[in-house]
Amino acid sequence: MDYSMENAEVVRDFRTRWRFNYKQLFTFPADIEYEAEKAPDAQLRCDVNLEISGFEANKVTLLAEDDELDGKIYHLGFDPKFQQYSFDQERGSLIIQDTSKKLGKYCCVITPVWTVSKSY
Image 1 (tube, rainbow, N blue to C red):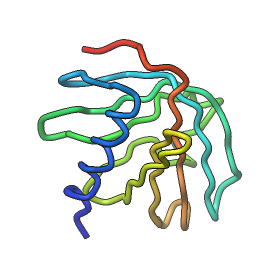
Image 2: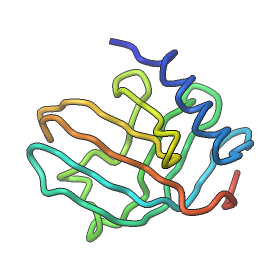
Image 3: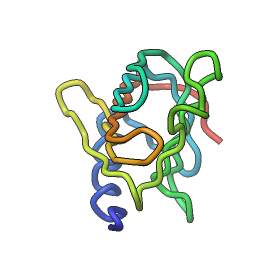
Image 4: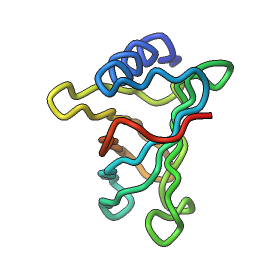
């Protein structure tokens, strides 16, 4: 199922909450909470890329080091066509959920730790 339209609205709400008004790629620091059926739960802080426009719009990538969150075990990139995004207004968190062969049912909660960072 293609979740692109619904996820675009979720990302819009997330960007509005954190005042992310950048035009292309935005990188920000965030606390990550990752739960999965087939992998250990993980909590860490790392940078996150959020694609703002173009063919990759609303794509999210965790820029974690392998010793923090191994890409061989966890999904580090999320595509709005395939995963379901939701927004926790109280915490300001972007929540990404799906089920995969690699992880089973999983949930990644992304909570920015401040509102200003790098943009390209």
